[in-house]
Image (tube, rainbow, N blue to C red; front, side, top):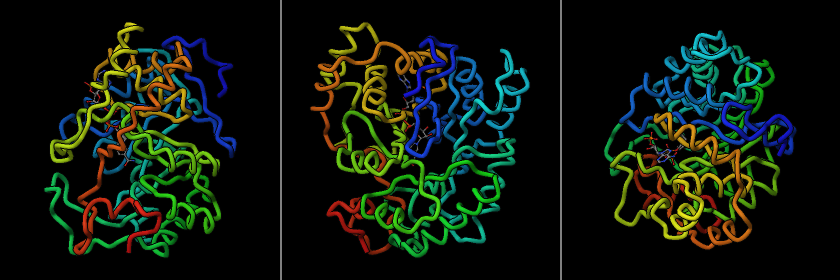
Length: 345
Ligand SMILES: NC(=O)c1ccc[n+]([C@@H]2O[C@H](COP(=O)([O-])OP(=O)(O)OC[C@H]3O[C@@H](n4cnc5c(N)ncnc54)[C@H](OP(=O)(O)O)[C@@H]3O)[C@@H](O)[C@H]2O)c1
């Protein structure tokens, strides 16, 4: 981790994580998925607040429905109209993602260009394939609904999409490309076939869902693990909650460390992420939480004993199960995640 340009205080430039390929990615990002309950303007305001506090990495996606508003915020940030001195575009790390209904090769560049235009950018730092399935579902649909067009993973189709992302890099429009919601067998195939390798895999990671095998694999292949839902996504849509889901921030080990340090359990989850070498992208529209989350990753790392204690509380509790992406004859959400180490057909 390059800490040269950080004094570890809010308002300083956030430290960078150096990927094996040389990309310098800020160690914390702001998530921007409003979970159907937070409107686009509130998320754009959170982006202004976060960058003012020192964040430099904003995790966007076309499907979040707020890239235009975030684009307006970024323009204000870069022109010094956000209430603090201008931040140069070069300092920012902006991610966007290709949604599932735009995997067809002819759709990739137009969808990317729309995100780029909405965000008001000349280039994107990172562009991800949001999910490895081209399976579309209407917004806010019931989790039990299955699209008749949904299909299991097809490597041939995924690579046809990936080739289009590689072309965006060739055109100088994207600095890095990456995957999200992948599994080891899928990544094995993609890494073998890609001309331009993914710089990262964005994946669900929090103390109750540590994914040790996939995490180690991702690191061993030189990919950066970007950790989504790092607090256990307490604000996720109701339809995504199941009775078996556990709550990271209620875990006695997390609470005990938080109490001893006089910090919120959220900060403990984020300190654990940073100490483990994954880049958390917590969502918040609350300025105090945005600031606390930044401070959590830039000050007072966990001790060895605290880190070891959290390593033991993994519950293998996946919260973002992806049910809506299932195809007609799929057995259950587990089919999306290749639990037996082979790609589900
Ligand atoms: N690639 C993918 O498929 C994928 C999937 C899911 C998510 N993501 C990305 O990851 C981001 C984060 O994930 P997430 O939104 O699911 O969950 P999360 O970041 O784990 O949790 C966000 C929730 O925690 C609350 N919170 C934030 N900071 C807090 C603090 N310091 N104290 C107490 N509560 C706090 C927020 O409420 P307040 O607003 O009130 O602070 C919000 O309700 C998303 O926004 C999105 O950018 C990507």
